[in-house]
Length: 541
Ligand SMILES: Nc1nc2c(c(=O)[nH]1)N[C@H]1C(S)=C(S)[C@@H](COP(=O)(O)O)O[C@H]1N2
Ligand SMILES: [Mo]
Image 1 (tube, helix red, strand yellow):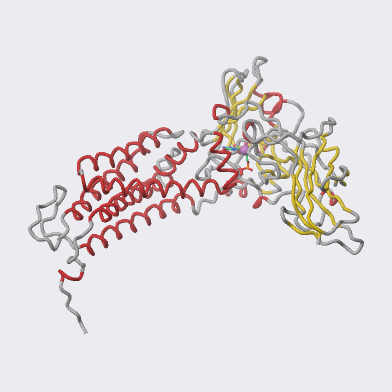
Image 2 (image 1 turned 60 degrees about the vertical axis):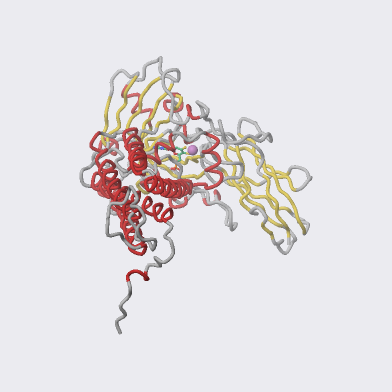
């Protein structure tokens, strides 16, 4: 049966129409149209036109925001969201943009010229953000510019539709923003704004997918094959325990923490990659990936730690790295005596300032190409990154590295230094309880004992002692597992012989090979790393 519907009644037009919310929806639709267009075009720019800059307005605004994040906000974000801080940023941006577009829709309905002008002004902010990104050229402005033009048209038409809505109160004066005389129904406006928003959102999604998926970043390394290192390391079986919940001595690549400012993981083509040594050197040099693979590679066990790691936190991981010692490259360029720092730069413009001696002394500072026997995963710096034993990542571990500028601390500074972090970042001695987890319960064995376990690190010094204290008892020495390298962490276990059932608290502290015990004094991560003794509440069953 076919029902014929009276166009006047189907839309509920008997009630006076509330136009404000509809105008808000029109604004959101215009925003979605802008971003859908711009993000799709940006994907084309990145993928097919080979633009190295950031043409995506969302990435550009997000990146510009990250660059301006004050230390307290970064601390809070990492503490709250951990390595999901980028997801949190994305959600925050989505909410902010939706609210802003809704308000712009309402403004356009009330004051058409002002509203459209304000919408375009937001577009200009997006353009400025794009321009502010490293390696960005004028062509990278095109996607956002076209997006804004499309968005303005959509905004005008949709708000015009809202303003021209039919109402029961016939003979009302036409609204200044009305563009249609016939007048659309409320249902038509809802369908149109909903449809445009949906298509725009799909455009954003498709843009993200197109620019990330299907790029086999590690292809070159797999094709060329990694060279056999001239010196290899082996990990003794007794560097790890078999206690459930105890960290493995080597962290799986897939589980390795990831921290960086890159909103989209740079996909660097190893074939086109070069590393330049510039600045205070006798001779500036440039090497290709193939050159690098021809050098004599070594392996090293190095534990990376993020300066943002909280006491007891998990922004720390240990790996077997393979690469070419940086000191050999620097020696080839000839470091001038006045230099005291190397500013390493990533393909995305991020920089780290490393004291020159950490890259020229005998330690295993590497231009690393592999992690646990595999080419570096894209998130961890493919094709080449720096790994420097003993220093926090923010002053040393540049991923996707493309330049080493030999310079001085009084002339240059790394990315985080002007943002409230210390100029130098030696890793503080630290220890962590893995077992039990906070609030966990341990079951005593047949003899009434429970076993606690954890890790301790004092990179490039080595861990000499770990002690645990249960409740107010005496400090007890834990058993240290094998230490294959002073540059990596060391696992420990402690068996509490006659564990008393009930609630307890355990604290842990480590002493490094220079004899210094980690301080009890608590410090927040900013400006040079957290300190204090990790304390865990648990119970014995
Ligand atoms: N290009 C680039 N490299 C970078 C960073 C970054 O933001 N960009 N962050 C550094 C920081 S703060 C840390 S702790 C380490 C983390 O390395 P990972 O992600 O491989 O664990 O990378 C360092 N290298
Ligand atoms: Mo970090």
